[in-house]
Image (cartoon, rainbow over all chains, first blue to last red; front, side):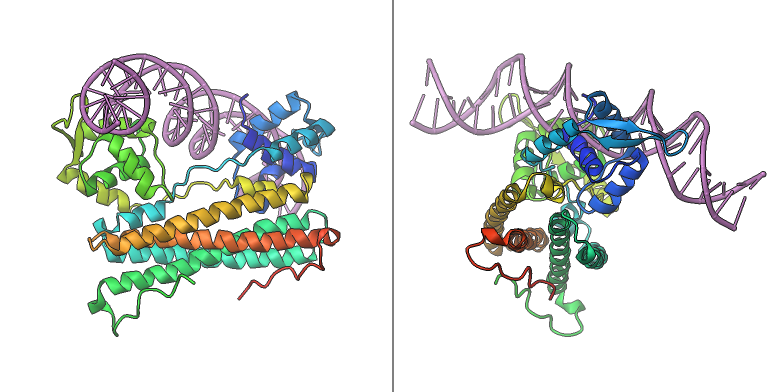
Length: 193
Length: 193
DNA sequence: CTCTACATGTAAAATGTTACATGATTGG
DNA sequence: CCAATCATGTAACATTTTACATGTAGAG
């Protein structure tokens, strides 16, 4: 088994929505699942080969020379449901920003501030994207739309949390060196509800 | 180079707080960084060997036969600061829960509800843990405490976001099949502030 | 005709997990 | 003494990324 269950699940899932080429599949995964999932060509093509060998997908007529469209088979749909029913695998966390902040004293307050501000900016972009996707999703009355909405909402909540955390974190960093503040720094947080 | 920069950063960081054995280091990483970082023995021991070879850490007198304590050297501290100053590496996202929800129609509303509820329960546990750690941290007046606080706050915000998302998601799932609800289901969300 | 986007695939290297083998020390 | 915990390390396996090689089709 050269490919993992996880990759097979994403590939079968993608093909369950519509038949497409490996190239298109990767684009779909990037665009539709990109906020919480990623697969590279190096995983997708071997997975397609393995799935075809096992009869879970079928290669259809080429749209153009040298390319082929894959479609999920009934057995593939069955397999997809099995995979989806398995317990979700959580990858080990590896948050480079938080690791750097944990040892932040080594690099100083200013470097930490920069790190937090970068994170804040990314969260803002992400939040805007999520809202945009949600707006588009309103128009979608297909049966998948409510399920997709769940994942978009998750992205929105995560981005908002990242944003408010960043603001709070900047407050903590400010209170570290009050002499830098133009005015007496405000209290640290107003958090726990 | 059998070990990565990322692992070296965590190992040097741990030893920058106090000299310890590889075993203790792994426990420290699990307990202190566990919410956002993980290293296995299979990474830690080779990293220790490599760092010692490069003179970034030193093996000290054994506390007991067969064990040795490692301490960071001045050059090791220098290296740690270099590593911390590098741009943070974000691992590719792989959220098994969201992947399953995206294709949720394949497994049905009830399975999705279960998935969301499990996530909610985990978030609740996580939130309680974070609050506990924060309380303990109040007593810590050391120079690292404010930086560590930043990482705990991040965990708190993430857990809270996960919690509120889960509640909202359950609402969406309820509204999917109103005939199941004992009373007319409420509106979908009250989210975007 | 030439550039860009579409398309497929492989090989090597990097990365990370797991299970195993081995032994010391301590508390009951 | 015996079990649990402390402690070190390796080897095999699994996973993933990256770079490369190759070619088609359409737009300007």
